[in-house]
Image 1: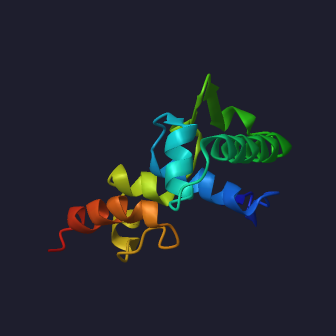
Image 2: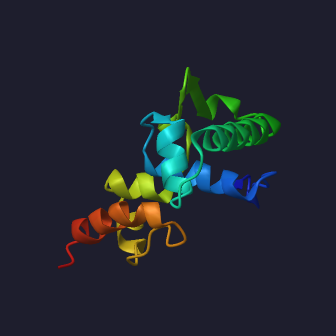
Length: 130
């Protein structure tokens, strides 16, 4: 996650993962329950999970505001998403068929996050691997 060539610094470690999760969802809205279930697989009390997600969204919003990109985040009631068209992302370029990015893909996708395994599988088979 970079802004003008520099890595974005978040107040909370999981905020980077939240942003990655929202990028993976390609602009689809996500509920706090979906986010907490993906980011904390071991589960937790729903009140605590909801508060944790609110804290991450707040940190993400503050970070994006700091760089003048607050419009990237879409918040509607109990859901959150990103504006896909405002993000310069190799994953999105690859999905669009940009051959430079398709050819650059080496079979790895967000390897630090278990929730990304489904997308990794789709990319693997899309790439023509069997």
